[in-house]
Amino acid sequence: MLISVYVPLVVTVPLAVFGPGLARRLPPRPVAWALACAALVTAIGWAGALALLAFSGVAQMPQVAAEGRWSVAVLRAEDPVYRVVAAVSALVLAGCLVSLVVAAVRQARHLVWVRRERADLPGETELVVVDDDVPLAFALPGAPGRVVVSRGMLHCLRDDEREALLAHERAHLRGRHHLFQSVWRLTAALNPLLRPLAVAGGYVLERWADEEAAERVGDRRVVANAVGRAALASAGASRPPALAVTGGAVPQRVRALLAPPPARRSLPFVVGGLLLTVCCTSLANAASDSDHMVDSAQWARCSTRFGTARVVSPAERQHRPGFCCSGHLRPGRGD
Image (cartoon, rainbow, N blue to C red):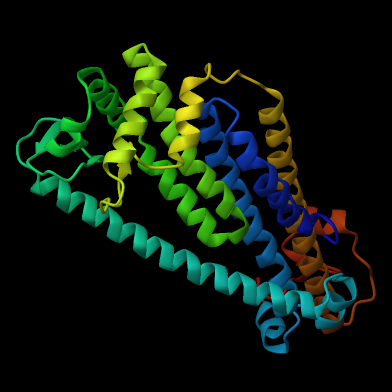
């Protein structure tokens, strides 16, 4: 546990440092899935590691030890975590959980807003054209999803660019990009080091929709022109909190569309998968070590309580989980 418990905390650093840069140079669709998986795994690993570190300090409190029926002295002797580290981990974990709750409430409010806006739209078709001179275009996910475009936006684009804009917004709905956004927002709230991945994820979603629009239209330059014109037309206008063609870093998106499609590379995904595997394995190993320490502390207290001097091996304890020392029932299981 001395080393393995810190591995999930350390794995987040290279992903947060190198992940955003790689995400901008790789095909957006697989990158979006990779970033979502990385965010979930590292956020869970982050919270799990902090919980194990915090537990090592909480478990040594006399009240907790009495309730858990284990020996504080044995646990303190076998536990390699300093009390200061355990206390800081507990405070950080508490702050992260509060941040997660706040982010979850905001996300719930956003979903309520989306549902209300979708219900207020006229008609039942996927495309809704609103009579507004302000250039707007965005997607409202749901069942069914709706694409909202203002007449002001349509007047700013040519026919082929309008087709590209609608293909972009429909790609957001088809790919369920709002779910990716929710994952990144919640995991970044739980683990602040993941905020660069969340920012990169928003850009990747727009690039994903751009690439699908380019395939649908058949001309990357047309999509680039549509993105640029839409962004210039809506500059200064208030934009709803929804998936929109004008989202993300528009100049970088236009440059990517004017260039050939990004090449597929497997090495970054393999390296990322190895890092996530190491994270999961280390967390499982740390949890197992923590369980063994608590088990040893419980057996030590049981041995002292019944006055037996026989030492029971870990293998024997594992095969006889209901008994303590020389045949007595373990505390909490029938005593």
